[in-house]
Length: 261
Image (cartoon, helix red, strand yellow):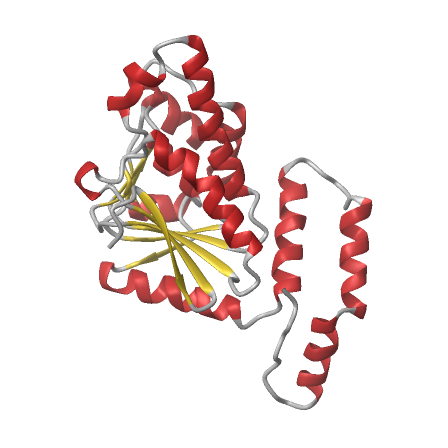
């Protein structure tokens, strides 16, 4: 196992980003925040990789939040605070902006910045040990509009207010019921379920998957109609290599071998 606080594993076509501070319940320090965009860029630039899984190094926690022990240093001056928060939001934006599908694999604590990071993934697969909380009201701070919107888009305005205003802890079953979690597993089944779905995604059309990602991103940004670029991309799919292969495979009753990267 790497000693770096966050590192990348490559397992065939699946990339795995590991939050690796188990003694601190994977609390997110400045090095992790500043490294995440680099790892996301590495995944995006590697045509062999199709899916990203983000997980904690210990089943006790996905991530317990930002490392508050760093706060006196990173908030020492307005300049250091601005730089620190720039790096945090760059990490969120890098993960949220991935065209390749992303799955947060969550066990144990998923608190504060860890929960916000999980919200940046396309899906959140969790087990029944997982708990969720975003506690700015206990620190006298407020989350940015962008991060608050990601939560409200999933759970609705009222539940988002309850979680943020009340620093409310959400147990796994409730998290599934309110839409915070995409799918819930027993602890022994989480890895199998997450990696199994990642492998399914690897066998499907990457053109379709990435175009859906772009479409949902525009919807989340408030679009009522597709942008010209997105519409051209959608229509271009009917002349693309994946469509031609998918159509042929369907007619020939065989498994498609998609080649789009």
